[in-house]
Length: 132
Length: 371
Image (cartoon, rainbow over all chains, first blue to last red):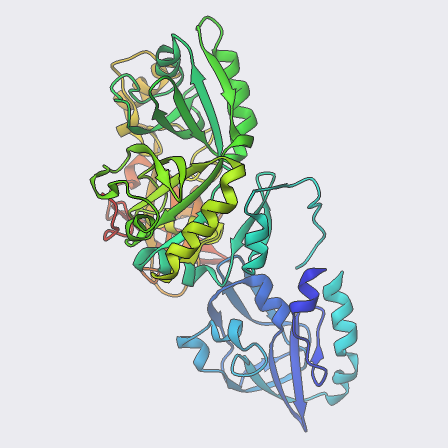
């Protein structure tokens, strides 16, 4: 598949089959959508974010992404409490298209079940999913 | 999100390699493999509104109508007045079924010895079959030239400047909705000052053997003006901002030109297929009309979303987007006549929530450069 070669899947992150990534540092997780996801969605028009302090559960929807092509639910890779949302997305949602793993992060979550991390996909498993 | 697509059977236009080279995302569309976007739909949309862009529209169908009764045939099979056309003119038109439903919308070109019809890619076969049946009793010859005709469109306020780089023809004097035959990039080309964006622009019909030369010449000329390549994604949002109907979305065999707000192209002074139904509908006024709807806030209306009047579901959106130019949600849909006046309000259900939508006068975008 042609796309596979162009899509960036950093090895230091964990992934879901729904195309979210998570970066875990201690008990804090930063969550976003993958390069593959942003590329499939096309230009992102706006993002509906959860409130800071609200609870998210593993593989439950925590918000939606409206892109030109389609609307898509975002699923949390982990269970915990939202400690921060990316305010930049309000004024510049397409930053997710440009920098899905850096400035285009979506929420930060304080983990309540660190063991959940083991259930997530590593980069090679995620690559095999998007190659299908 | 991904999924296998049988791309082998899809038709590639003569510009396929250029699209791939430019990094286009290619998608199946009406049996063709077409670029839906290059760098991004929003940037492409803005480029056409503010500057200039080039589209590959080779998927569109082209028919020729020849013969002593070509004019009579087209008068009978289409709703607009073809007999008033002079050589050199183009005409927006519709073909209807006997019940008034729309077979397709199309452009008619009056050439010196024949007519050219430009039809939607998704309808090429259906239209050709429909028209072929209607030729009975007329001394005409209908030919499908789609495979021998590629089409590039250059659209935007700077379209004329780009093409002026590669032709000596007096483009400035060309009227909107007229065509000419002139040398462009050293090749004789039939082209028209037409488009589906609301902006000034040109559409060029090119034999596939000249496709490379034209693409390269326009691309080279466009560099000076920072011309962008435009995919089908931006084509859709550009036409929607102008309330230009898209067949399969806003019009189809279950809707009539009267309901769709296309009465202005229906000439009741002549006889044509579907006239009785359309005339009755015009006189009695249609029960529903296609209207422009504007929503508030950060919502994204899409085709198929339900339209409500209180508890009653009264219709569905036929097209919708978050307008890149106006930065607000816009949509088209059919509503009962009593709610079709501008200022009327309805509600749109978007994933379980209701949002107020106001009927507004077309077009959504009022500052387009077309003339």
